[in-house]
Image (cartoon, rainbow, N blue to C red; front, side):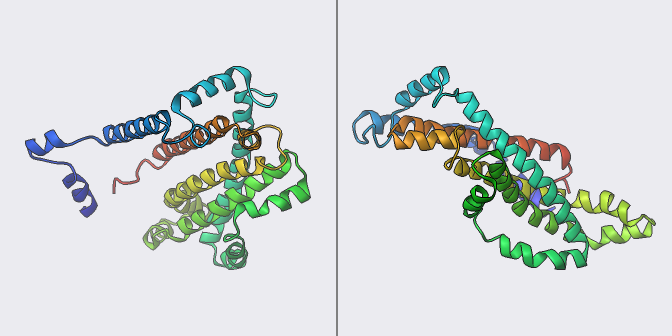
Length: 274
């Protein structure tokens, strides 16, 4: 109730305040417009040179060239598709394994005690630290990159799933016991739904890191992908292509996050209505 009241009070109630109220999307658009104007001025007045920071029109022109001609013997869409495929395959495999292991660990004391030291040891290690090992054991092909993303996704999904399962209110479990449900029914009908908000929080982190790691992995031994394109462009001082690759990574990451947020609203529709 306190949160609901505070949210309602955040919106102005008197007529004068309502006239001054600016919706959040409008503020976001204004912020982006200001950035674009400042960018245009700085790059078109000579304050910042084109080799340090390309102008908006230079990036747009180079983007059209990449769409029409591709880069490094592959189309721009091929580079995007291969990076997305690597990311999503590794993310799905790692997330499924992480959710299963995390839910079991959060609801089973013995299993939790068995894997906690292992996960506590692995979790602080940056994902990119595993790139040399992935190359050593799996070579420069697709397998090493997908394994690296799988490990990254698993590492950050399992902890949230475990926390969600362990944080199920005891009242829920007592109510289930009172109704005489089996342990399996309690797991799927009580623990899993209650842990979904935590699971989605972990999935968002895992997806963002998986997308970042695939780009880092493509910097080593890849012939296609956005990471490969950025690395090659940087070697030849093709600064506009580097910026276009970075912008595409950000936009695709934003789209992936919005998609996951949409699924969360559909599957965890009760969140925030308590």
